[in-house]
Image 1 (cartoon, rainbow, N blue to C red):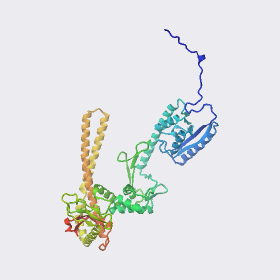
Image 2 (image 1 turned 90 degrees about the vertical axis):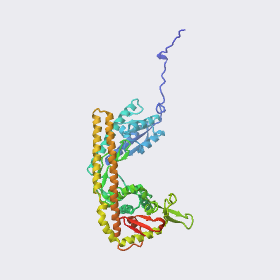
Image 3 (image 1 turned 180 degrees about the horizontal axis):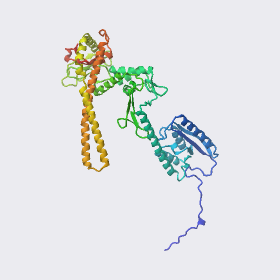
Image 4 (image 1 turned 135 degrees about the horizontal axis):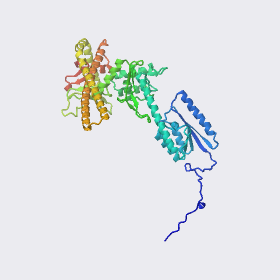
Length: 535
């Protein structure tokens, strides 16, 4: 059955005009004023930029107040903060929070680049504000975000601004590296223990703080670990470089390894991996570094600094023999099983409490060690006797060391081997780079290319392993020389036998103490030059 379709005429259609904004849910005809705020930002703290920032604040304050249908909701501003992301812009974050809370209906800013140079940040923020009925007006580009073309224009302008930020970042990076290559040193720290900034930004020694730096180096040379040094500084109520009460071992390590304390400067220790997030990474060969010798006054003598670096390398290779618990840790050896002695507490909860030293394997070793336990007083008394014995025979010690020092300290062969292996590594690296470049230029059998490359990598790994062994052996020779020289210095600088124990003397002279089986043959002190004294 046919149906009659009635088509209404235009005369029967009545248009009901909107009375409420689809963005703000506010009546289109309303006596209430729109709450308007402005956002201003400059990216540096330079004087001319600061005046620009003040001008923006003044301009927008007057601009908003001249509109009778606008209600002034404040000026939000960030000074001296990059626009690449919004993470650290407190003024910006406060403004967005107030807008989402209904305190702002319209935000006015100079341009898209002032708002954000990061496309993602810009669009996400604008969309969030739009969902909550808050519009943004970019004056320079004449963009209203509630306009139908707004988001497209903002995407384009934000992308352009982001590329501008990339270009600025690359130019800044190039300028910084050019300054590094020219040997111009900058210290990016507000507080640098031992130094102040001079009139032209140069490093000037702060003598009061330099005493702390020298003390740290002296304690390390005495055998203290960074952990032990940190505890000493904390107990002495010396504030850290950051002004805190408690020192950490990593802070001590950073002071012990910072070449600036010997007057030099290694530039570009870190580099920026992402210009948007400003994320930094330790430079482990990814970008060039520049070493400037004699840049500023030294607090630590270069010889002392190099000695400390050597000792740190030695300690890394002997992790189990260096302890922050006691100066005796890692020094006393069981003559029965070869294990180290450790401290044990007897009667820990009563008046008979005392600390003794005993072989750590005494009750775990299958053969059960027969070596006796020792008290610290017994160790100290025996040490004073042993040192005074060698002190009385020091002329003989000096003659013996003089006769064997060339053989003991000779590192000529190791140094030559080190240079040869380094040269071979450079050749392999260059060959691999040429292979990769050639493979990118022309078509090759990829299976054959991969086989050649894997062969090169295998060769590199073997050479690198040999170089590591040579480096370790070289460090051992230099460490032995360093230890013997400190031992001889202790003997030379004393006029008479010692009567009191000192940690420094113990650490500078004793290599180890061997406790003979069952204690019948006493303690054998092995000194740094290899001399043995039985007590």
